[in-house]
Length: 195
Ligand code: PNS
Image (cartoon, rainbow, N blue to C red; front, side, top):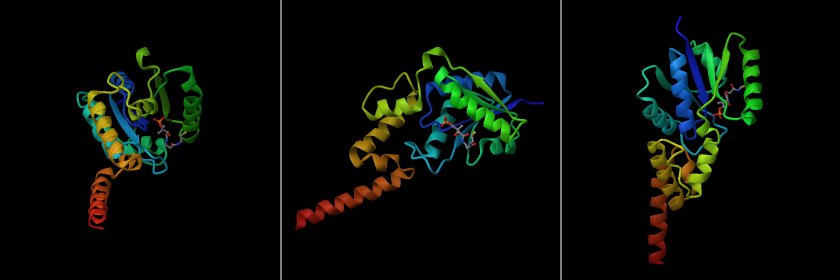
């Protein structure tokens, strides 16, 4: 039987730590699905489709890795795609309590599904998506923390945020909103000039 696992998460944005774990996971599982949670309650920096594009590009060289999105319970998704395991990364002892709770709850919900923990390389043990977002938003360098493609996408986001405000940059449908907002701003300016 083929060993299939899902690697669920928010990936907002995907980091070098995620990539490190994907590489390790791809070596012990025959098939690995990186599964992005579609969570309408969260206010992400990157839309699900942006995160999917970044992850697809980052994992393109792994033959046995694919990227998907899901909503609802992780265990239900795992069952749907016939995975036997959930892969999660543990960076430091501080991750352990939350991960243990989640793993035990998932086991309660679906006893046949195993959670497999792996440690990313020690050099990524301090790295998190939240800190990457914070450093990028405050203008710090993130070059060694995320792949080049993500650095570029973060720069684009920050440009939009600087020009039109954080809310526009964050909105999933940001491009449409930016165009809309820019058009409104131009209208207001031309009205002010006329009056
Ligand atoms: O990258 P994250 O934010 O640490 O990932 C957390 C994630 C997506 C794995 C977790 O929030 C999750 O599994 N959410 C789906 C809903 C669910 O199954 N909840 C019960 C988990 S015990």
